[in-house]
Length: 507
Image (cartoon, rainbow, N blue to C red; front, side, top):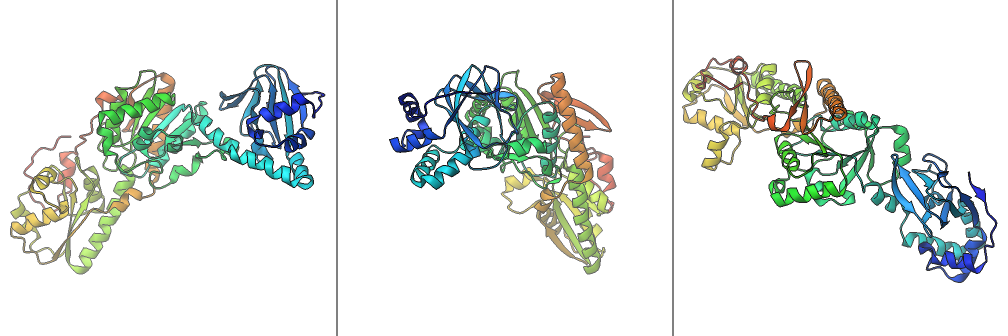
C-alpha cells in the first residue's frame, strides 16, 4: 500500500534530482520549479504493487529511491531505478495499464497526473510545451516497451514457402493452445528472412485472449490471433528465401534465435521449410524444442494428411468442372496444368473429383501416339497435367513453357489430329489463396492440439501427424517428402483407356 510522504518541492535536493532525470535534463530552472510544484511523493515496501496490468492509468512516476520491476506475461521485462520515469503514456491516453510494476526494494516515488499537466497547460503554456517537447525527444514509452517486449521470445513461429490454405489457421490454433498453457507466442514477420535479419521490427506477437489483447494492443506488432482461423493466405511469410540454403545465413538465424532466448521453435510450410528446420536443428541446442507442421496443397509429406490439401482439391476440382462445361459447350480439348511437382497428389485428386478424362502425373509415361489417337474423334476432353511432368527433361532442353504446353506439343509431334480445338492452360495460382475449408481448419486444430501435447511430453524435433483418424508424431529424420500416389488411383483417373508405360508407381 502506498504511503504519502511529506517533502519540500522547492528544496535544492528535489530541484537537483529533477534536473538529473534524463527526460527533464533540457528543461530550464523555471520549468523545473513549475513541475516540482505539483509533484506528490509516496513510498512502497518491497514486494508491494504500484499498479497492476489492466488498472486505469492517469499518473506517471519518477523513481526517487529503490528499484522496481515492470512485469508482463508473468516475467520481468525491465528494471526501474533512481531517475527512471515510467507510466508516462497514461498522460496522453485513457487506456489501461499494459503491465504490472512491483517494488523490488523499499522505494520512494514522485508522481504527477494527467490533471496536473492539464492545469499546467492552462496556467503556464510555455512550461507545458517544454515538458512535452522533452517527452517527445526521448520517445514515448511505447517505443521502449516494444524493444523490451520482444527481447525474449518464448515461442517463435516461422511460416515459409509457397502459400497454401491453412497457414493462418494453424498459426491461430497454435496461439490458442499454447497461450492456454501460459506460453507467449511470437511469429517472424516474413519467414526465415526475418529470423536472419533479427531486428525487433521483424517480429510480431500473437495474442488469443481478447482481454490480454486489449492490454497489449498499443505495443507495435501485437496482433489478435482469432481472425486468422479462417483467413486466406499466409500473413507471416516471405516468398521462398533461397539464400537460407547458405550455411552462413543459417548460422546467423541460429544466433538470432539464441539471442532472443527462444524456447520453442515451430516451422510451418512444405519441403523447403522442413529443410530449413532440419538445418537449424543441427545448429541449436537440444533444450530448444523444435517442431514442423506440414501445410502444402500437394500433400507431399509422407505419413500424414497435410493442411491445405483438402481445400486445394476442392477448389482444383471446381476449376476443372468449369473447363469441362466449356469443353462440352464449344467442343474443345483442354490440357490444364495443375499443382504437383513431385507426387502429383493435387492434380490427381482434382482430376478424380471433377471426372476429367486423364491425369498426367510427374511419373506418367504414355504412348503419345495412343493418346493422340484416343482424342481423334472426341468432341470434348479435359486432361490434367501435374506441373512436375518431365520436369528434368524440360530443364535439360531449356524449355520455357509449362507442363501442359509440353504435353500438348508431345501430342502434336505424335500426329494429333483432333476434331476439337486443343488449348493448353497454365497453372492457376489463385488456388493458393483459397479460403481454407472445414476439413483443413479441423486438421489445423488437431495438429495444433497434438503439438501442445508434444510440448507437454517434452517431445523434440518432431512433426505432428494425422492419418486415418489417428494422431501421432514423426521425427525430423524420419519425415519423407516424396509422397507419390497409388497406382490404382492413377489408373482410376485414366478415362481415355490409354496405357501408362510405368506399370508401377511407388506408394
